Image (cartoon, rainbow, N blue to C red; front, side, top):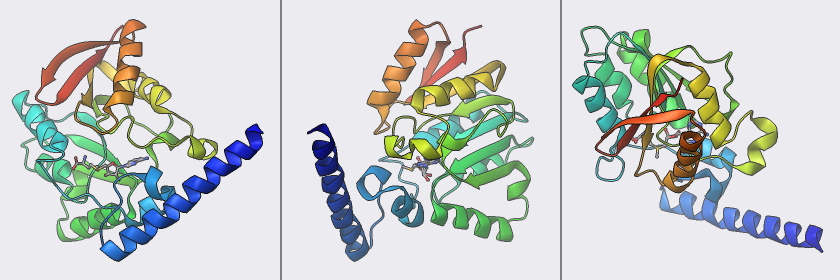
Length: 226
Ligand SMILES: C[S@@+](CC[C@H](N)C(=O)[O-])C[C@H]1O[C@@H](n2cnc3c(N)ncnc32)[C@H](O)[C@@H]1O
């Protein structure tokens, strides 16, 4: 009975995904979430342009870095978009930060490569890898002064569990383990995954692992509770 129910749900998800893919291919639009189309289609087709009215988090991160003159630090950035505004603005600083950023989207990564070919200074301080953030481990990450986890809760897919190391909660644990003393971890309250992210933040706060330092527009800034 339970097996039949699970199979029915899987078949329904599969047929809805086929419909969603058809919709995206005829409308020439990009999928926003992998859950609608499956991870592979999402990685191949998604590409997010800068849309400050919908998603101002990267602009607010740049403002935040500027407000506190954060330069010459080690930064991780979750979700580059095709615009790569975090890397491009960083390059203009007197002492640029060393940014390690991630995208799951092949077109966004292709845009990074294309930008780096035209703008030879970009990669010097802004490295982008194209992979699933949930595959990262303590050995694949440097020590960090700032980590933006803006899209926590948006993209974790239980069906991908055999291929990754983390879920949303253990991902935060991972980044806390890589945070330098006085390091900051930033969350974004207007994320579509905010409901899930907030649960993790509340749990970690209750467990005494993190404490809130401040808010900046739609960003929440936390530090590690030592
Ligand atoms: C909605 S876009 C936002 C991009 C950018 N932060 C902005 O606000 O303009 C989400 C970003 O997260 C990235 N992303 C989605 N799932 C991911 C995953 N599992 N691992 C790493 N990056 C992922 C996408 O490739 C994309 O760059």
